[in-house]
Image 1: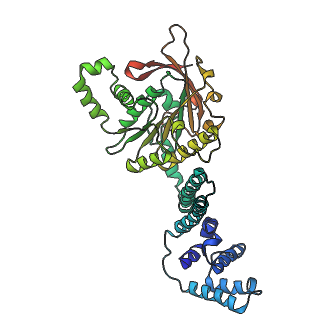
Image 2: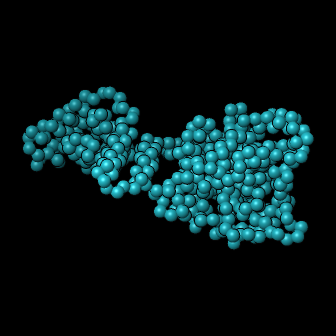
Length: 413
């Protein structure tokens, strides 16, 4: 293992990338000193050739060493000259794991000896462990190497169309990497919005693709029924009168492309496991802020909310676009055109993380009961064939047909 890690770090790029993960207490003193010396070598040299490094080390580091100590280093460097194995691909993960297991073990030992230990200490270390492993082994994935041709093609084609011309022209197609938040007061139509969009996305998916919908708001069976209504554009009475035909029509249109996970106490780890089991083309949260995660390391609920949205952004980049709904404070009750300071618990957490922020208001004026007022509050990276730049922060009037779980566009403000 020691030869493996030295060989990995002998490339300057790898040293810069991985050095911080190799802690002195998990390697020998000589290896730790070699790794420390590498930093000075890289100040004026490129990748290491071990014969040259050995000579350089004797001159710059060895003058104050006893002969027997310097001989140990010479043997290490000579062995590295003849090293021709492929380094263990898991070497960095092993060192990170060893470091964190040592830290966790120290905390556990304190607890075993009677010292008061908070479970949040262990939880924070485990979360940090996962994050460091990901960053250590996946940094190269974040380098943009796509050709300009492919980049231009990707932003002008592909993605999923929204149900409704207003969204396609203002925020563009829904594509991997996008984090979208739809915010409104209760009883405005948040679940209806999700249902009408999810069913439209589902009809654009290929066989074997799916939408993962994490529900922690309403009863799961009621949400599923809203999805059926949205897919068919039918009222409860219409579905009941032709039940068998309705079921057949839904199976033909949607099938198993929308998977609803009804787990009120779902954690971020639960969700990541579902994503592994059912790789999604779209991820939906109703609602993200109710997902459990980061309680031990966030300090307060606003900070935790920020971390949740940062996590959701990573899910969007790694796996599929994410859509979540969010609450609006009581100040937004009865207001038509909502603004981001009305987001519940947010501060600037949500608008800072999301690519697209949609907010929907309503009034209670006579004859306005069904009218809904959609504001495109934030709109970053809008691409697609139907984009109209004049609508990038558009405001639109919609009408809700709650019985059929759909919205009808009524034009711009």
